[in-house]
Length: 195
Image 1 (tube, helix red, strand yellow):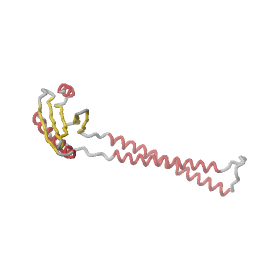
Image 2 (image 1 turned 180 degrees about the horizontal axis):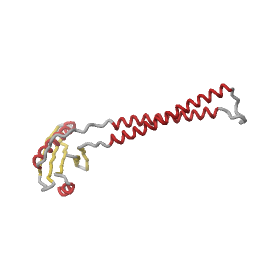
Image 3 (image 1 turned 45 degrees about the vertical axis):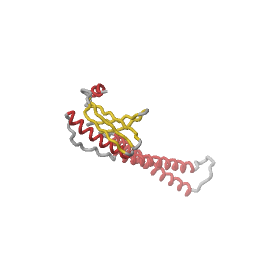
Image 4 (image 1 turned 180 degrees about the vertical axis):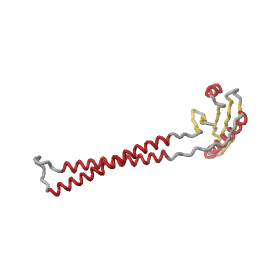
């Protein structure tokens, strides 16, 4: 494993084990140097509940990082925590509003067509309408058509803006990721990121 870590350019590999005991859990962690396969940091402790186990993982990660940095000659200067982007959620909201506007505009355009179709063409044998009824249908149709096109165009712009914001908001990635991968009779604790 140390050879793989060295090939990837890492300083060390973290190995971890979580054991379930009658009265709680035991967490054992260690960092092995990628250069010479020596153990550079260890952490081992017991807790009584699953909630405490999650807190203990945070404590263990900090203890491992501090000791491993000292042993490997690295600096653990505090780094600014990346702020969560609001562009992703705002993008989804704006895009959703755009989609709703496009749908509403399409419905209004279909209603405008329906109003136009309700006006009989001379000589087709449709039910006769008075001039006032025909003008009212035409006026309603034009209103639906105008509002429909405004909704479709504005909705398209909102949809494009929302998609752009959602994509830009999704680009931000965490600097550190922690995952637990259970396997048959064991589990692997994987820590990845930029240190």
